[in-house]
Length: 371
Ligand SMILES: *Cc1c(COP(=O)(O)O)cnc(C)c1O
Image 1 (cartoon, rainbow, N blue to C red):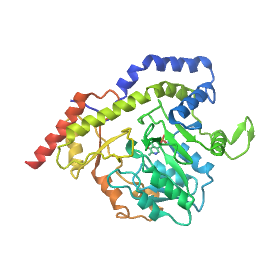
Image 2 (cartoon, helix red, strand yellow; image 1 turned 30 degrees about the vertical axis):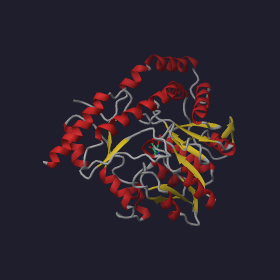
Image 3 (cartoon, rainbow, N blue to C red; image 1 turned 45 degrees about the vertical axis):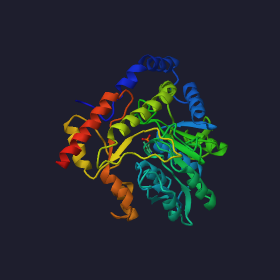
Image 4 (cartoon, rainbow, N blue to C red; image 1 turned 135 degrees about the horizontal axis):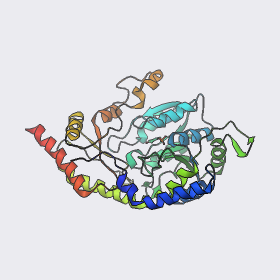
């Protein structure tokens, strides 16, 4: 048996001809940066997400950095980020000179706990960065209420949840802006790096438009100290092909998750994903939890089944964040998740039979443990 954690081949072979045509259009167009393919993809993504502005950028981390910059967050400011997230959420805050202040997740959904956010607010807090982790929308009604009450900005990290929603509203449309990633393994992935900043605010769109392109709107006129953080024509053209399939692929991810739910329901000692009743889940990842995590991962590997851990070391315990002085034990829920979480194979083209095999292999492991 060989079931890798991630496999792009079935998804990509199904759209090969269209992807080749997109490549040729860019190749023959001989225009590679800031052109019609980027504009067309931005318009298509804005429509998909239901936002006024979508601005293609270099990657997800840069989208978050540009969002914070446009909100004029910097030195001396604090931004509340989940303790349980991919490190990039916190890195963005650090790169603009602000301080990430971590807040614990809800132990059931693994998403930012609004009560923990409330406790983390200080006079220096400028913004909250909810991360729709693993593909599930955060409790955005409570987070937005807190932001309004305290006069805080909200920058959503929507790198893992393209197409998710909370109470029917799409993730990425709640806050002042949202950062999106098109890293290859994300639900919508480029053939390389890519990202997007979406916003309904015209002023933020205008700033990010300039900031991503040397601080310039008009060629050779630089209004602000900008960056080179653009999405290139080739990635935009390829992403536009893939965007058409995203609703279909999202439904497939949800189907795979339902199979896992069904086949693993009765496996003792295994905690399955929990979805908040008001939240949509687009299953970027299917994460189970067990106290025998390392043993289970090794067993599955021996049986030819690939898994990953999201994430083995939380940001506050990374060497990069030593200066924050946050010791082991500072965020017990997060630390428990890092010790017990395991992400199972989930990709477009993963068959029902393969899901059954994975579940059956996990059941075998549990049975052997109990003997
Ligand atoms: C992937 C990811 C990012 C960063 O996106 P890149 O495109 O890899 O820079 C940020 N936040 C979260 C939650 C992510 O999963």
